[in-house]
Image 1 (cartoon, one colour):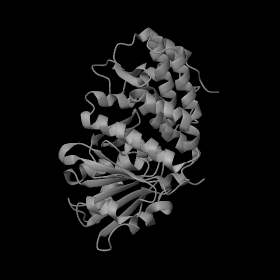
Image 2 (cartoon, rainbow, N blue to C red; image 1 turned 90 degrees about the horizontal axis):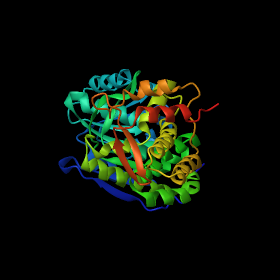
Image 3 (tube, rainbow, N blue to C red; image 1 turned 135 degrees about the horizontal axis):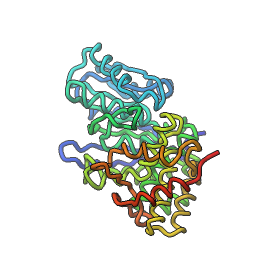
Image 4 (cartoon, rainbow, N blue to C red; image 1 turned 180 degrees about the vertical axis):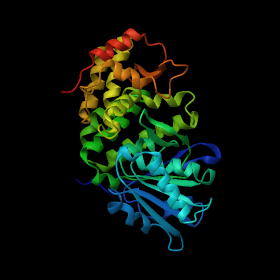
Amino acid sequence: MSVSSSSAAPCHLQVALGSRSYPIHIGPGLLGDPQWLAPHLAGRQVMIVTNERVAPLYLARLKAGLADDLEVRELVLPDGEATKTLESVKRIWDALLEAGFNRRATLIALGGGVIGDMVGFAAACYQRGVAFIQVPTTLLAQVDSSVGGKTGVNHPLGKNMIGAFWQPRAVLIDTDTLATLPPRELSAGLAEVIKYGLIRDAGFLAWLEATLPALRDLDAAALIQAIERSCALKAEIVAADETEQGVRALLNLGHTFGHAIEAHQGYGAWLHGEAVGTGMVMAAELSARLGWLPAADVARVREVVAAAGLPLAAPADMAADDFLARMRLDKKNVDSRLRLVLLRALGDACVHAATPPATLNALLEAFPRDG
C-alpha cells in the first residue's frame, strides 16, 4: 500500500504555550529535510530512540537530515505496548549516561505512541529535563500522543499511570510514513481522529463519514486534512488546559472504557485505538441511556466506528465487574467518584460525574461482547 498524491502541500500549526510554544509540521517528504529539525536542537548531542520495526524503515532517512558536526547516537528498543515500562525508560537513561550526554542534549522520538511517550518521559526526568522532538510514524501518534506533552509508561494495574507533562520542542509529521503502517494500525489511528469530531466538531465528523474510504486508501490530501484538523483541535484544547484540570479531559472520550479493556486483556492484545473505538460506542450508548443522545446519533457513532474498521463489541471475557474494577483507577476520577466523558450531542462532549451506578451497570451488562 502506498500514500497517493505525494505532492500534497504541507501545513504548519503552532501549539500556543507561551515560552514553551512549538510547531507541528505536517506533510509528505518531511523526514530527512534538515530545515525541520535543526532549529529545535538544544545543542550538539542528539539521541535518536526508535524501535525494531521502525528503525529499518526510517532511521537512516532521519539521520540524513542531521548535520555532520552533531554527536548523534541511536537506541533501538523492542516494539509493542508491552514494552512501555520503566525498564525500557531506564535503557534510555543508561544510553544517555553511557554517552556522557548533558543538559543540552536533545532526544528524538522516532516511532509510534509507545516510543513517543517513553522518550518524552525519559527527557522530562534526565538531569531534571532535557529537550525532545516528536517524529511520530503512526496515525494514532500523529493525531494524538505526539501533541500535548503527556508522557509516561504503563503499570500492570493501569495504563499511563506513571508519567509527566513535558512538551516537545517540535512535532514533525511525515505522512509518507503511513505507507508502511499495517491496516489494523491505520484503523486504530482513525479512532482518535473520529474522537475529535465527536467531542468538538460535528462538521468534521460529517466530513469523516464521507471521507473514511479515502483515508483508509491513504489518499495524501485527505490524510493531511484529517491530521491537520485533529492536531488543531488538540492544540486548542492543550493551550487552554495543559495539565488536564478541566477541558483537556474531553480528549478522553471512550478512554475510560478503552483503558479498562487494554489493561484487562494485557497491553498489546487490543491496540489502543481499537479499545478507544469500542469505548466511544459505549460512551455514546451510555449518553443515550441518560437521555442525551437520540438513537439515530448512537447509530451514527456505531457506523463511523465500524467504517473505520474498528470493533463494536467488548471482549467476551470482560464482565461488568471487570470493567468497573479497572475504571475505578482512571486518572480523571476525583475522591473515588467516577468521571466519564460523555456526549450531550455529536460535537458536544462533557465530563459527567453523576452517572447513576444502576445506569452504568445496565450499560456494561447489556453491551455486546465479541465471540
